[in-house]
Structures are given as structure tokens and as C-alpha cells.
Image (cartoon, rainbow, N blue to C red; front, top):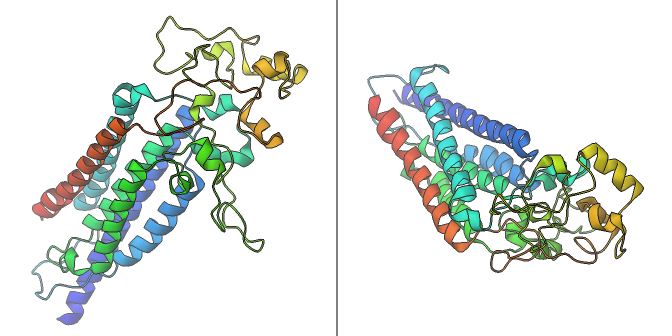
Length: 370
């Protein structure tokens, strides 16, 4: 009997980890694909490290610590990878993820986030391939990361609910501890101000804090050893470089005329950028090849051709002489993806509602039907 109980517990746990990895793959892949198509953006280096190591390895290692229940059930657990319960669990979690992400992005662009949100695309910023992790320096990737982190933490926890083959999840102290710490970590990241902590994960980060980063082994080598080859430290290539609220309606990076981008996200339809001397990206490349950017020069190149890659050739972040980017979120300086305090309240509420929905979906829906 003990062997049967252990075997059923093992099977239930295997199915739980299978569903978790399917949820993990579908949420991460679909969100990354949408970001690439929409803004040519992707997750940052340590956002990937957190999900791929802390969640996909450490959390799963705690999920398999679930123990069998004392009483042998009259029914055996499902072993079908395409069973109704399995498919409903996976698709329901995916649906909750995208509903949460959709609401969060709408609130960011048209709700309380409209006062500070700015749009950018790494295509127009001309971010070179070797700097691909800097494509996460925007509001969209920060928001998708927080939603993804919330969904995966809750999915891993609810899939450890005991029901009829395993002990209650509260007896697995490892998964409970990890879950609580993970939720607190997510809230800390949501409410953080620009710092080494927030800039490591490219959430609520600004250029000033990013330049001051001095984390051993991450942003600076120790004994010639460093564990990060991504975007830790240095300039923060935030969306304000392309879209900003400057009084002159000119930002650091000038898009070609055919991009038809307003000077800022909240600008009125009648507000236009100064007309650039090029209409397409190809024309801009030819123009800037003829008139290259030179710091402190009073020529066409300095006026129209600065790009983030030029930071590598100078000690500062941004064109010289400096250009005003307009009002920022309080406490943030230079290009950033900082949330306002008001938006943080709304985003926290959205993440809490997402967590409650996942618990209710599995506990009352999936397990309640068995």
C-alpha cells in the first residue's frame, strides 16, 4: 500500500511539473515573440537568469518534495499529457497571464501610466546585435517580466496543492518559503526606486543609477572573473531617447519622417516633431554617414545623428551638448523605465488579482471538478 501511495504521489508530482513547464514555456515564448514583433525588444539578461535558474530549476526542485497522503485514494491520478484536466490547467494559466498582461499594458499606456509612459523601438534606436540585452530598457519588458514572474510563482505553488494523492502544500515548507520570498521579491521590484537592485533586473531603473552600479562579479570583475556579459552598468537606453516631453519636441534620437512618431506618447495630435532631413532609415544612414555625430560640434551630425552606440565612444550618456528630455518621474534622472507611485498601486492590485485568479482557477476549478 505504501508503495502504491508513493507511486501515485510521484505520478501526480510529475504531471504537476509537466504542466508547470508548459505554462513556463508558453508564457515566456508568446510574450517574447510579441515583444520582438511589436518593439523588437526582449527580456534582459538577469530577467532570463531569474526565470531560467530560480524558477525553472530551484522552484521545481522544491515542487518535487511533495509527500504522499496517508490514506490511499480509491482513484488513481491521471497520466495523460493531453487529458482534459491537464489542458484546461495549462490554457487557463496562459489565459490569466495574457489577461493580466493586457490589462497592465493598457493601464500603462492609457491609464495612470499615460503621464510618464513613452514608446520606443530598438530598430529606430539602432541597437547593435551584441547589445541585445539592452533591448529590455523600456516599460513594456519591465511590465511583462513582473506579470510573468507573478504567474510562474503562483503556478508552481498551486500545482503543489495536495488534494487526494499528496499532502497539503503547507507541509512542503521549502515551496512555501520560496513562494513567499518570490512574492516579496516581486513586490520589492515593483516598488523599488532606481538602485543596483532594480537596475540588475532592468525594472524601475534610470541612467544615473545604472552608471553607478558596482556589483562584484556582475557589473565589475573580481580577479578577472565576471558572471555578466549583458547590460549591467553603463548607460540606460530608455524610451525617452526616442520619445520625450521636451519643450522643443526634439529627443536624443531622431526617427525618420516616415515613422510618423509623435514627440511623446501623451502629445496632442497637433504636436509634431521638427521635420528631419531624411524620410527613411536608409536615407538617415546615408545622411549620417555624410554628417557623422561629433560631440559639442555645431553641425548637422550633432543635431540629427546621435545614437546610443555613440555612448561607447564617450564618457557620458547622451548627446553633447545635453538636450532636455522634459519632466520625469520623481526621483529618476535621464532615460529610464520608472513607474510613478500612483501606477505602482494599480500594478500591485493587478498582480494580486492575478495571483488570486490562479489559486481560484486550480483549487476551485480544476481540483473541484475531480
